[in-house]
Image (cartoon, rainbow, N blue to C red):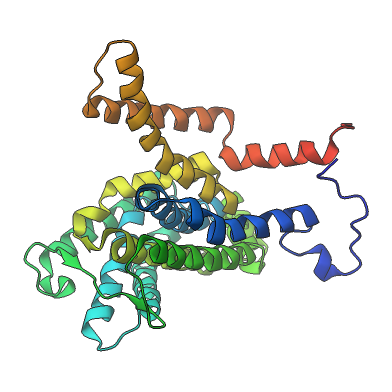
Length: 358
């Protein structure tokens, strides 16, 4: 009876088309955001910030960008790690080469660098699709690895390609503790998620979904495939680039090109598949699952092994983690292709009818 729409009347189109038309959803999201900003910092330790919260927030932002391209526009991409790397190194060059460059503009300019890179490697999407497009975007990953290792100017003439960012400040406040880093990343995530949610509900978002469902039919009704696909690559790459800059500046501090290997591209794709394709909420579910599961396995499996007198090494835990990820991806693709977000949606729908289902 707590999740019913009785008495909630919409008298204008604006009220009917708002992001959260049900009042309970609005209150829940507002309470969740307030808890994330106020309650979690009061209860979390430095280890929790560094091991779980910061990776979760930044990876949620990156998964949000991947979901726009893969889930909403239907363009398979395996170059997300490259877009993160371009965003990180682009922001780094603006930050160290321009005297007095603020952190937030540097992050946004890094995202714009990733946008240009994403549009460049999104051009094959105008001619190929499916597996061929995945291979074309995978080329972006190998090209970025070569570029940041061989072109020394991009890494400020660092021999190994390893660089670091220090002295981070936002409006004069130093970003040097786990709490301030968490607040910065969370603020950017909330703003980006709100913008992405509005964007996918707009005309361009409907064009993306039309291209995803059937690009030929979309072209027949007047949608320009070139504009829709390249705009999806641009928006997705921008969000992923900002996430890459946050990952490098805030989470790692010191990084090298290997920090953005093809492994991170696959992890982001796993997040989208498990969380839910074509769902903003799915990015958060997938990121939480992928970030938290390895930590739970590293803690639970050795304890379980010692309980039965069996020693489980770290390498064995890593292998079990990969096997479990693979099994879960196959299970979700077969049983629930729309991921955890669909299960959440089904649960909400049942709550709207409970206790009088019909």
